[in-house]
Image 1 (cartoon, rainbow, N blue to C red):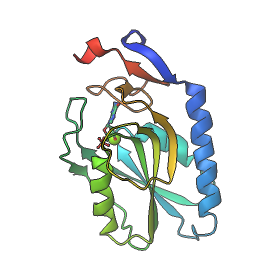
Image 2 (cartoon, rainbow, N blue to C red; image 1 turned 180 degrees about the vertical axis):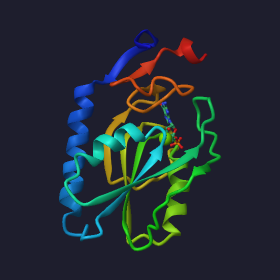
Image 3 (cartoon, protein in one colour; image 1 turned 60 degrees about the vertical axis):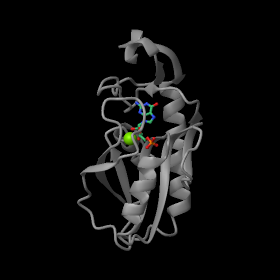
Length: 182
Ligand code: 5GP
Ligand code: MG
C-alpha cells in the first residue's frame, strides 16, 4: 500500500491539527445558534467518513450526524458530473442548522448537486466543511465556509479517499503513483 504512494501531502499530524482547528472554528461559530436541537453534520460517504469522525469529535456542541452516499466517479479518477443518491438521510433537516462534511472539492459538481437537493428540504442554514479544495480549473462556485487545505490538481488517496475502494485506511494523504491507475 505505502509503496504505491509517490509523495505524502498531509501527514497524520497535519490532518489531526487542521481538523481540530476546523472543529474549534465550528464550535465558535455555532455556539449561539446550535440551541438545544444542536446541529446536523451530514457526512458524504464514503470519502468523507474518516474526516467526519475526527471532525465531530472536535466540535464541542450538541450535534447529530447522518450519512448520505452519492456516486459521481465509478472506479475512474475524474468526475462524470452525473450524481446519484445511493443512500439518503434518515434525518428530517427542515429547520435545522446543517453542516455538510465532504472530503474534497474537485469539479464541485457533487456538492453543487447535493446543496441544491438539501436546500429544497428547508434547513434553517447550510454550510460546507471540506477537508480539501483542489486547485481545479472551472470549479463550480461552491460557498465553502470551512476548508482544511487547498491542494494541487493531482489524484490523492488516504484518510478516507480511495482509488478503486482501496487506500482509504492510509492515515495520511498522499499522491498515488500514476502507474497505478494508468
Ligand atoms: P467533484 O464532484 O467535486 O469533482 O468530486 C467530488 C468527489 O470526487 C469527492 O468527494 C471525492 O470523493 C472524489 N475525488 C475528487 N478528487 C479526488 C482525488 O484526488 N482523490 C480521490 N480519491 N477522490 C477524489
Ligand atoms: Mg466524496
